[in-house]
Image (tube, rainbow over all chains, first blue to last red; front, side):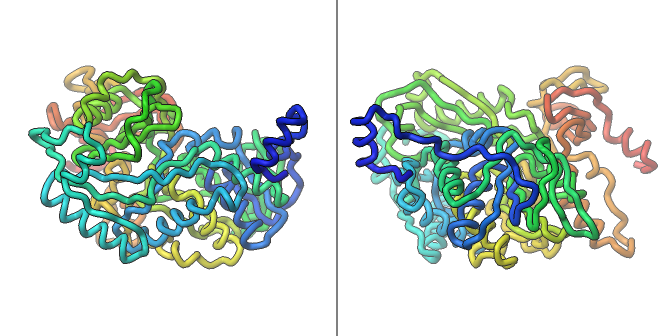
Length: 416
Length: 95
């Protein structure tokens, strides 16, 4: 069923009796050509593009819980392509371009809203760094605009411009960045994949891999054995635990990141604002809640909940940036498990095991990457060659010293 | 989280800096045949377990000792705290 304004009117006039479930709930088949482990944004996007762009069939997505219950429903919904390094920027710009056409392509309202992402600067050194970053973005076809303090003040007059320690000296603005309704991304991809024959199998946890002579044959699951020619893992924070079942050690640690939503407020913040002197990012949802977050807690965790010191740190950063936030009450907070890689950049690559492919290490930037991650992983699964924008996302970059370390902090995942 | 320091008693985890997996104590032999491979694994690969995890914490705001904390990554429960120097000596290191 195609969604449209006409369809809504028709259904309204006929008692809304014609709506159907957006995807089937199939029983797993004994064998598939492609099995994608992980029914989050990346896994569903991978299945969708495998079917749509690469013409593949006999595809299944295995999800241990329900689709959209993991990080795709836990993030702070920001999309942007403001990276510095050559290994990253073309990929994220590819992703942003896919976001721009996504809703028409998969016929689902994901509320992609290009309301702008503003990174604030607080020192002369930071201005130089942002100028360089903006130039790197331009070189890769992205948009970037360096604003001075007066221009920022005109946009967002409520910020604490004259903070004694961290005065706001300007900002780097990417107007094409913005926010997306994250649940709808999972649902849109699921519906689109299902319509192309992909089996989305929920409540199906992978408990092991079946292998012969270094080649993967299929997966053991809580719903029985499922054979597959090629298996792709896209399980974010669970990457370490899942790949351990295939005796693979990864350059990844799992960490918890907390996110927060305030009570609903009148429209105040138009786009996304990030604090440059701490780690704090905030936007306002269409319902009015301030959606914000900061650093990861900083220790290995699979708990999907964090501790209070980080909550305090995030709120302090918020207060330093926009003191009026102190009057807002917190409505909800939660944690998600991030696959923090050793250089802060992701991996989309084959593994040492034939037929087993890996997509992970997204740190806390996976949401914005969803479309390109799915596309590039599908490209790798379908053709056995990396997509042109993801050639740097290889396992062997650590062995070869070809790290993509945006922050330059080294092999210390809790600092990325 | 409260870390029960072997010398100082219970201390807030905020006083500590987290480094990572306690396997970082076992630095490979630089003169080994396969030192390259060993250092690659040492520096970049992690077990990253869901469950008990032995990890290094540095008491930066305290006595500046290194601790090996055994903590459950599923619940954040800390079950054991040792001085890293004791752990290293037990493993045969001289210092």
